[in-house]
Length: 267
Image (cartoon, rainbow, N blue to C red; front, side, top):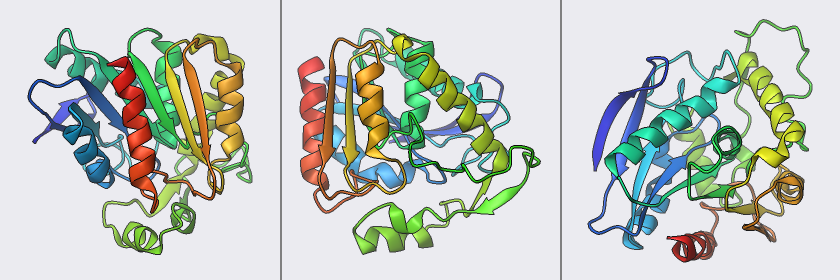
């Protein structure tokens, strides 16, 4: 395991961790969700490592141990340009190796934007509970003219998982951000608009995974994204009774094994 502060495209320091395995099949970049951090993907990383995949992770700017104003974006391109910068780091350190992206929730949104702006760069995507259409209306009650620096409490906790232990750990986690900026929501609205308006720009292999009972990001997001993107190799699975964090649900081993099986076929 190696950790470092990596300078993103604009000089913002991003906390990056990599867990490498010898003679890997491929390398995976994990992109986490809103208000959380890379440490919440330790279990997924262990499973990927044990299946022969090296893993890179990073904290979004303004999240976890990365630099930047807390839970804030000034422009919609910042989030996917950070993904691109870390992807380039991963690519430079793993020449000739197949490279995949696993994105959850806002990380799925960031990954979808990255894939739409940089088609053909990654060998494939696994997107979990990805915010690609905002059918659940997150932040939709915000007035459009609030100062971007206005903050609201993070009220995501109860909806992240059906396992109360996961919810309790999330709410007690000191690295889980407790507030969200209006600026972040405004940039997401713009990014969602881009994804809706340019579905043909996403052309890469993708496996869309979503909990049927996800109350934070509607599974309709994944259904619509699946139907509209231009990818020839695309798969969709909606998991009955599962909430938002399908990689943390009681059935997580089944979910993770299906994601790995998808990766194995393309590695």
